[in-house]
Image 1 (cartoon, rainbow, N blue to C red):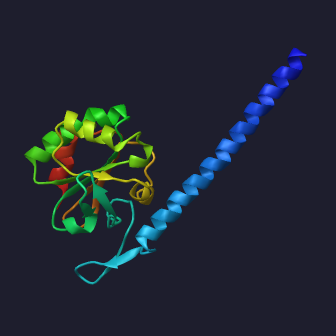
Image 2 (cartoon, rainbow, N blue to C red):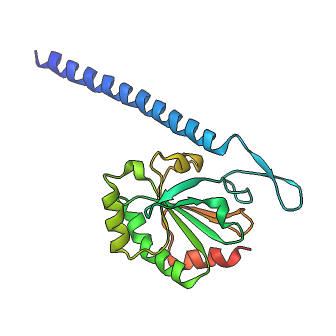
Image 3 (cartoon, rainbow, N blue to C red):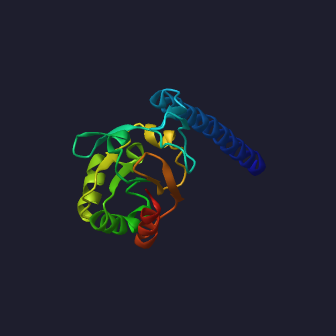
Length: 194
């Protein structure tokens, strides 16, 4: 009788694992479909010289554009910051490495002429209040963008967080980091940008 119960439990666990795997694949597919809609299928744009330039996630590509609401209720679009050096950081309040790099990001923001767009994976958060408390705890002065439907996160194919992209003043990706950055790394990559 004990073997029979054990068999039923193992079979149930296997069934649940298969269901969960299939369900997560469908959710990921929906997120990437939304990202494609945001990007409008545009893979090349003309640069200032009239040459075709690829939009993508590799260094040297034009950074994909996105528009998100900030914690303050304003709408922010990446392309609005052309002419400025931009750091895009994808993060969440529950992520210990994200928490560890925030003081360095704030110091970097205060010390250098850079726009920081801190894109919160809002769909993974318990509440907006948690994000507000986090921003207050670290005295963050740069914009906190709310990726409520994970559209920008899917557009940038974010897997580990934090993930950071450094975008030069012309809109080209000059650096990307998977995992936390410290102040010295931020400054080093900033100084390499146009």
